[in-house]
Amino acid sequence: MDIINLGASDGLPPVDWADVAEKMASGSPPTPGDHNARATWLSTVNEDGSPHVTAVGALWLYESFWFQTGSGTRKSRNIARDPRCSIAVSIRDADVVVEGEAVRETNPATLTRLARAWTAQGWPAELDGTGTGISAPFNAPSQGPPPWNVYHVETRSVTVALGTEPGGLTRFRF
Image (cartoon, rainbow, N blue to C red):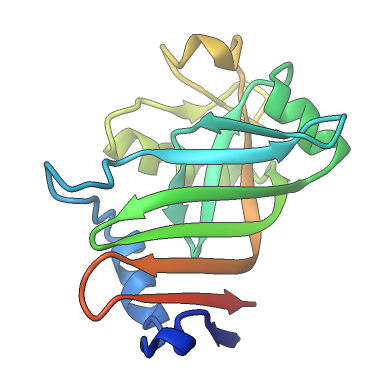
């Protein structure tokens, strides 16, 4: 991993990746009332090159972000054409942007583990009848009807901005 301390010119130390990864793995959201309320945003590339940004119910699991969407959604069409994407999330004391490429997951065992993880967070997902996607009794209307495809982001880089002293802004390249 390459570490680029973007805050070095301001005398800031590099961010500790292990601490950030542990907070993301534990689902450590900002505390209520923090300036960075919990939201996860996915950015994909529209056909004309402009960005498409939408909120998603992403999971950080197995050192990667995972998200789901219907095959007819804009983000799904964008990913099919150009898999480059980014996910931005606020965690306790930091904001994180992960950049990489979205890759569809079709392994039934992995999808079952992911469905269980979503269920543990309150969204009752399960492996769908085809074994290549997930289903649930409800989802955001913008996702279209089930089954939903599941993707993970093959991480290329992560930028972390700390919101607590001494602060820090670091990019990690994998």
